[in-house]
Amino acid sequence: MASLNTFLQEWHSSEEYITAHTSGSTGKPKEICLLKADMRISARATNTYFSLGEDSRAALPLSLDYIAGKMMAVRAIEGNYPLDILPISNDIVLPDNRHRYSLLPVVPTQLPSLLKHKEYTKRIDNLLIGGASPDDDMCRSLLNAGYKAYISYGMTETCSHVALCDVSSGERIYRAMPGISFTTGNNQRLIIEAPAFSFKHLMTNDIVELIDTVSFRWRGRFDNAINSGGIKLFPEELEKLYAPYLSGVNFYVTGRQHEKWGECICLVIEGDSDGSVFIESIRKHLDHKICPKCFENTHCLPRTSNGKIRRI
Image (cartoon, rainbow, N blue to C red; front, side, top):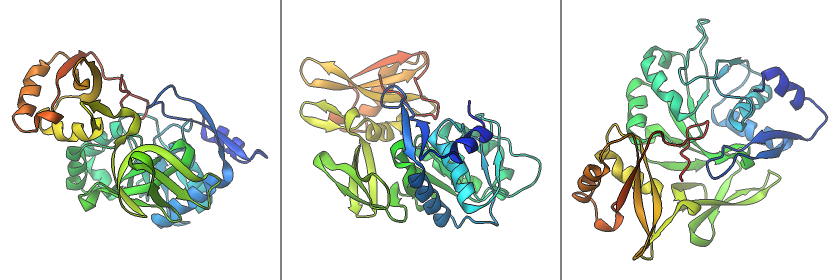
């Protein structure tokens, strides 16, 4: 596991690129080379968005092996502010130095620990949530506890986030970072327009509802779509609809082969709960076309290191 000193040596080397790893949510994690100039542009945009400068301070409870950790270090370098390195754990414990942190990047698996430490709200100005999107219940809990939180949209290839969703807005609308705009291509796939970055124009595998050139609602992954009887369904949207009927249950939605429909919706449940009970409850409230047709139990949902579900 990389240390801050190891990263700084790589950062200050004569190489133009930094090596990072993708999360592995859509396949096997892979090594990727990122241009330092792109990382600086991204870091400056985040510092501008959150008004981070010499009077700021940040903390990092994430691995420096991945882009979220690396970018937090670059933000601190570019903004000339201190960065406290915390233990990498789902249970976040702030040091006893009583410092106030302008920004704390986290993944969803770390959020429950922040709810246990409500006194941290006085020490954390902004939470930057990456890796995966927390559910609506968690977002409400964070707001009720007094946290100011933002959900990020981005990928390793874009040097962290290119858009942020302000949890306090009550809407899952992602708004572009400075210098970024959006269009859509075939099947409403999001295209990132970033003229200052080396990649300039990037077609993603994310299906969105484009609101305007700088904001969108995320619907799901193009490669996760379920084609059932000619109707294209997105597991991520279905999971939000099903959540009220599976309270306290860890689950995800995926597609399975079906003789009549080509594919059908399958509910994958962690543990040995009887999925037919949940399916019956869902059918009482939702249109039959978007209800699960079968279920599977699994001992443990497969996840990446940052909390994203691996749909199998």
